[in-house]
Image (spheres, rainbow, N blue to C red):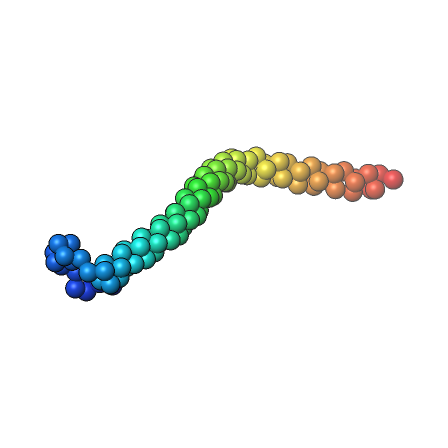
Length: 109
């Protein structure tokens, strides 16, 4: 049935007829060739699938690494933001003092 032979029976084994036997062998050979072609195609597809799986694993590892780096940088930014604010406030205070001193200096002249 798989090879295209609908009426294969025990009679074909016990009392083979040449035309039927040739047709049955032909069907079996064709099926074997077809199966071999399908196995080759399957092997090619399987190797492509394996390479894609490996690429996905590499991309996932890189993504995890970048996520960890982003988290570290975000944490550093959070930790440094308070320091940056303090320094900016100190700079503003110094700028204000310089402006006051400039005014005093211009008044003295």
